[in-house]
Image 1 (cartoon, rainbow, N blue to C red):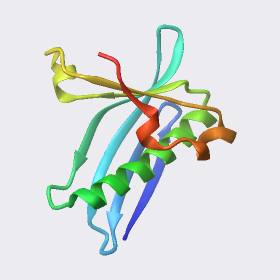
Image 2: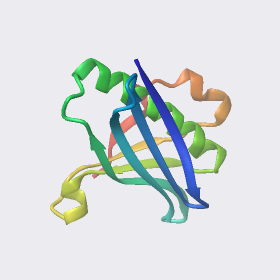
Image 3: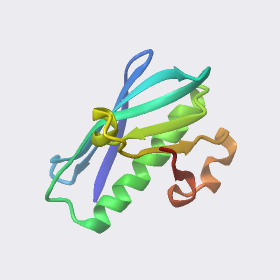
Image 4: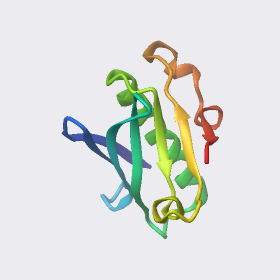
Length: 120
């Protein structure tokens, strides 16, 4: 059992997190709205995951947060969500993953596994 929350901090900044039934933080994600190549994007470049989280819970938490972030992105006219890995931040050629954001009325039809692609 877990609870996911997405909280807007400012016009271009959000934090998403998941907690277990005891209130322990399972994951936190910082999200920033940016314009890249003339298109509005959400950029995720800071995140943490509890080392105690087991794989099946991690997948369920990730899927729930993915859909919540995609809905928020669609409401703000964002066309994609970019997940920047630590290697990508250092400029080591690490991967950057892109999740295209579909319109709000199609979000329930999209599963996270269909929505993620490698772009770097």
